Length: 85
Length: 220
Image (cartoon, rainbow over all chains, first blue to last red; front, side, top):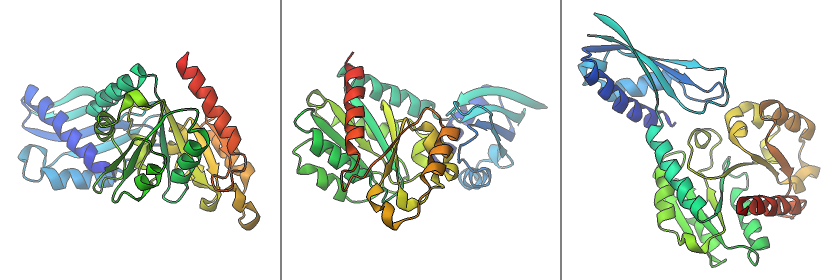
């Protein structure tokens, strides 16, 4: 349900990082979340693709969510992205 | 060429920044603030109403009401003649820091000791968003069943206080209190559990005393 706000923020971060690194294509986005977090990977990918479908650079990107073992970490952290330059 | 770029950035950076601003505004005035969360119908509004009713001669209250639609709940607080702001999230399932900040900017903060922020009824999303308050409360009622802690662990994990509401209905409803309590101790041992009824007032005083204690600690 809150995936939409997550995707909007994610795109802002990606736009900046891609520009800084002259990325041609983003292939993978690795996100780390709290072990109890309800962020859903499938849903997130679906919303992401619906929003970025016009943008060549993101069209093939796949988001992967990894749950940490630390319940204190309440953030959604973009760990790294895999790009083609 | 293929490259891995290390990012390590939170997706809630903006929300977090605004939550810090909210916190600063509230702390400057020594306002103690509660984010009241829980399922629709768990009794969040009545819980806040009874608290204000009980302590209105002792403290000055303010309320921010978060709902997807309507201002029925805000209306209930107007009888107390206290500042109330209704936020309609327009479909969003939770309050975020920016909505709360806009609410606070419209409140006479100099006239408030205790602020209740009633979040949108939902056990999932509100738990993920910081809004800059001091204390998180989850209101869970016995009519929802004892499995809520294990079904929605993050909500109980982020809550400093769990209000187990509607205990006046115990004679009519099967509810395994020991299991509920054990699950909380397992998921979130720091969460302070109070069982009460906002309707009949049963054990409501335990919460009132606890609130007074929190308020004293905030002042010091």
